[in-house]
Amino acid sequence: AWQAMGWIGGDIDRLSFETEGEGTFGESVETAELRAAWRHAIDPWWNFELGARQDFGAGPDRTYAVAGIEGLAPYWFEIGAHAFVSNKGDVHFRLEAEHDMRLTQRLILQPSIEIDASAQDVPELGIGAGFDKVELGARLRYEFVREFAPYVGVHWERKLGETARLSLADGEPRSTVSAVVGIRGWF
Image (cartoon, rainbow, N blue to C red; front, side, top):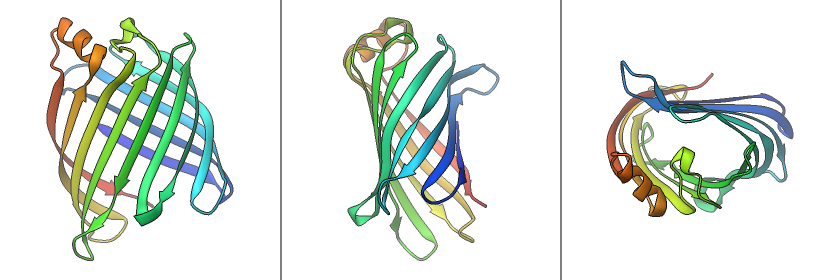
């Protein structure tokens, strides 16, 4: 799996990009997502986002218009809420949250949650209407310096409702647990 993000611009307006995906070694990529968006600060803690997303992977490719907000909630919770409308007319929603819990000055535990929902059934993508997926994770990282921090963790994903039924019909499990090892870096 991978996840990368970056931006170009100032504090008020910026062009941001994100990519994430996953797959199995020796096989083709299962899912991949690339997003580009204009972000505008609506106050010191929150940004409005408007852009596009392209999905790649095992299923049919989709292009989406994206609108949402991201920011820092009280008690330092990083929150993101987005709506996606595809070129085929299907509508999806995503809510994400994470929080850095400092155990020491260098050791940080980062729990996270992501909840996905769909406004309608999209059988060609294996998605049912309603809440379709929840992901929980926890990463423990050690910051040698703030710019370089290796981490270990666990990631749990559970498909819900009609999406879980479609997954079982395709011979796939409803839930998976994965170990996570990586490096967090920035410059």
